[in-house]
Length: 116
Length: 111
Image (cartoon, rainbow over all chains, first blue to last red; front, side):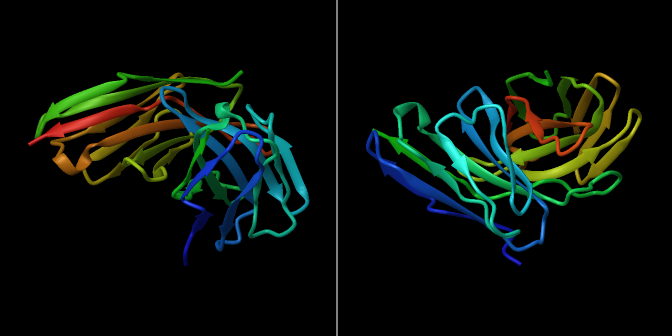
């Protein structure tokens, strides 16, 4: 049981390049989401999905696209990288219904992205 | 708009010196409040979920409590290995609401 797997762990891009950050989970979780973490600003939600074929925007969606063709995978695409997208990106997954449970969202180990 | 404020931003304790971290929140109906631990260079690690005021949960030296406006993470007799950033997040009620995080408290426990 690997949990949430993110690739790559590190990436350097030039301004204007595009790339896809991969995220896969093997826990059959319905919910998946992408966050970015910047110093002093905490984790901010980029996009999320409540199931295959369903996605929605979070707090900071501009410059990013997502799709969810399977339950397991939720890739994040940077369309045209900008220095402001330099950050650490985390993918998370969760069961749809947590009320009363002892479970929470499970996070991946992150992708550290630098845009030069 | 959901808001989460954590204090202090940083806390240095001597080994064995108990203390508390605070998480104040404003949310349009609370579905759950989450505490995470994050070590440098790693993803957040789940600690607790609290669902209603008055609820408490414990794990080793940590105890989380919840009121209608805030949550506390109490650390009893901490050890150096408890050093980490502790994150608080809320999930609002309503369909498919995701987590809103605070900025975290960076805890350092000195031997």
